[in-house]
Image (cartoon, rainbow over the protein chains, first blue to last red):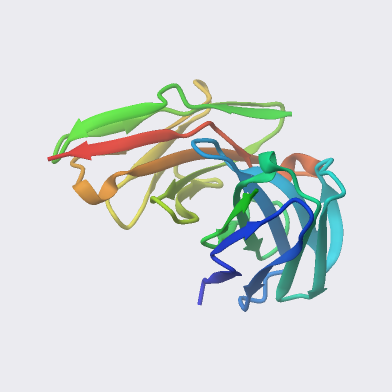
Length: 114
Length: 115
């Protein structure tokens, strides 16, 4: 099973709302990632978790708050977002960091901030 | 630091024609190279990757790419494309240590296969 699942598929939220994105994998991977992808652009790395610890934060605004409750789950908590945060949010996982590991991507959550 | 250049933002071709999507990279360390494909409204899927060994790598659906260290290239080719190959293709590079393990993506090439 090489599947990464993400919920919800679509999300519309106002600038004062609080919402969460969820990502799950059951491949035993120890590295998990959040990416943001704007239309017709490549994915941009936001966060990396390795062995359930945050190892990279790519200077992401604090209105995005990641959480890794266990080795299979990754959440992204959203609060007070701006319209420019509208994008496809992709989760990925890999066996480990580095050394040419393949990252497996989920289908993404398409977020619209009004 | 590493970077990836995909020279063509769009490549239109007719069905059954050959195609080449170009990718050049720069890096100060040894690299691993990837091609990912993104179909409309989906996430990214690994197409193929080069880690070491044979410089020619192949995917199960007929694509192949050749690592050329002297030209710092990793071009993707397919001898005969299908309508279903229409998608965005991203070349990516990661290094072998430190923060270089992060995937750096090119800007993508939209392959459109016309009947």
